[in-house]
Image 1 (cartoon, rainbow, N blue to C red):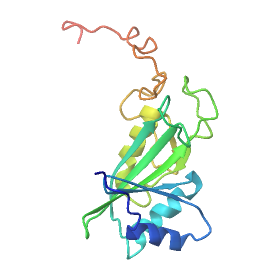
Image 2 (image 1 turned 90 degrees about the horizontal axis):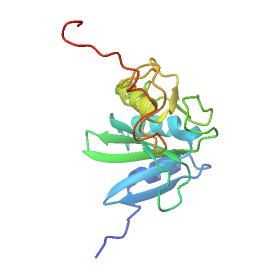
Image 3 (image 1 turned 90 degrees about the vertical axis):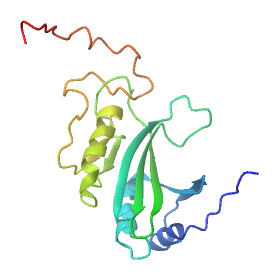
Length: 185
């Protein structure tokens, strides 16, 4: 028998108490609580989760991007960014998710004004590289990031390869490689 979600995780109450006039969505899957926040509220919520003595999520485990293009059920936005937080005192995991919907076609590398979030690097310095990876692979940019540049592909790479509308065979970037053999290296 599947377990019914119990939204009694104490972190939900702390966030709701800190932001009584804002609306949030809370979900729980396999006993993993997730708080869905608006993009404008993300940085403030993350700061409360880190600083409040009742939550004290002192470790940012990861920042991941998700492309929900052609997802079977409707989602509030095409892209999701998930912050995975851990309290080392309680050994407790908590997920914070934000949805973004592009305002420009996603086949190019143009900076979409709708795909911006505030960086969490001032809260957790370890957010620098995961946020760069989300930027490189999905094209989601982070305001106030200390070094927002590509991390896995080269600077002039013609797209964001983990977007589901990126061609599986690429856009010709393999054909432009300069062949180097043993004698010329």
